[in-house]
Length: 195
Picture 1 (cartoon, helix red, strand yellow):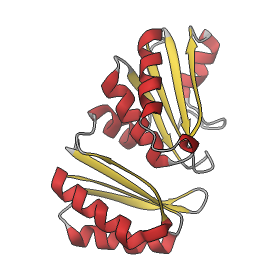
Picture 2 (picture 1 turned 60 degrees about the vertical axis):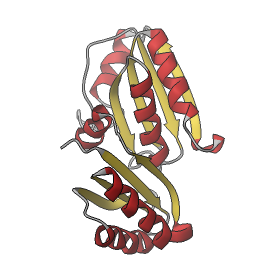
Picture 3 (picture 1 turned 30 degrees about the vertical axis):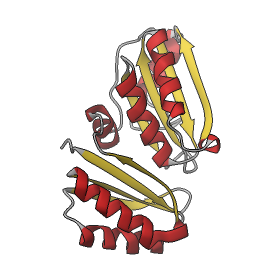
């Protein structure tokens, strides 16, 4: 289900995250809520719904979570491909001209970068991978023509609130076919084709 607004809060405390999530859904009507633990011991709260409701709920979650709310993202007009990538994991694609990767220290930063990059350039999102199996980090994989992928990476990195949210950014033109087969299948080492 594609929502007009999406927000995520990343908590360093599971208890604080549960308490904040409860306050969030009590504060405003939310169409979608997904919560749970991720590595390394963080708690994520993802909400979707009408813009004003999501904004109000997010503010409540940040207030109740206090210092345990380590990062957040609010996307009042989230790009549909970001919602799809979060919901389904990945979209295998034929080999393309370039692969771009943004690696972030937080889940919220990865979602923010994914949305900005796909809105600002003619690229496709191959994957938005969040937290588990990444030590709490996030990665975004874009595909497309070299110039478009470079633009998406620049735009995605440009929206990060702090420089320390970025681990690394790369653009790889003409990825080797064998490497593409691996990346297109999965980014996990032992995945059996799952992400």
